[in-house]
Amino acid sequence: MRLDCSIQFSGAESINEQIAMLTSHINTLKNKQKLIADSLNDQILKTTMAEVVSQALSTEVGPLVEASVKKLTPSHEPATFDANSIEIIKQEVYTSLKMDFDVLVEKSLKQYDLRMTKLESSLKLLDSWFSKLQNALKPIQSNVDHLSDQFDQMKLSNQLVLFGLKEDPYPEASESRFLGFCSTRFPGIPVTQNDIVSARRIGKQGSGLKHRPLVVEFCSPRMQQLILREKNCLQGSSVFISESLTKSRLQLLNYTKSKLGKRSTWSSGGEILTKLSDGKVITVKEASQVDALYQLTTAHPSPSKPLPGLK
Image (cartoon, rainbow, N blue to C red; front, side, top):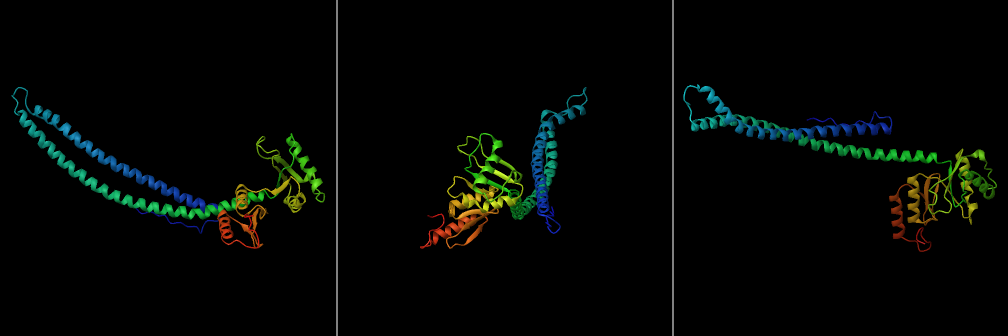
């Protein structure tokens, strides 16, 4: 069996087309694997049939010979063959038929053994190609996940999350509460009702939080950026403001804070930033990077400055 499993990426115009192409190859290989499995099952069926037919021969030859002898012997004449002669004829007929059938079965089984060997070889080739396709798909899927996360973060670029802002009993009062808060804390930023798309609380009521987080969506990212620049005005307040992050970025932010310190880790423009002990600020992209930084700081602590997260 010759398998054409070549992969061509040059004609793909986008990552999605590459994924579709790889998925199509994988499905094709799976279908071929199924056909081979069916063929192997067919081999088992053939062997079983041979055993059944052989048993049927031994069962049916006797009655067949007896019926033939009766037909050959006229009813008005005494029986020409005694019981012993009939038994001898049975054995000769059965032996003759069995020899012919054994030769046929042996020949068929040899052919199927050869075919099974080829099928097993094809299966190994399919498994090899399947593994290669999976490995080729991993970096593409990773890029797609990254681009999808970037797109989702862009949709959140005009949102703010406020923690600790007093919650009103009526949801429709959240917007007025936020406007009043801005006029008190950010008098230099003219936030009006026309700048806000929505203001909603997140999380279940009665979840243990006195005041659930408030998500405010603005008409444009500009107002969000103006307020974030002035969030230092909230020092000493029970309210904390942060930008809205995707689930994966929020998880990375919290993990970085737990390893490298809350005071030295923050987010800006959807990126996770951390300040090292030498004052250098770097962008964190993944958890493995955080682990490497944590091992580095614990292995080489600075005697003059406390390390982030180790105070």
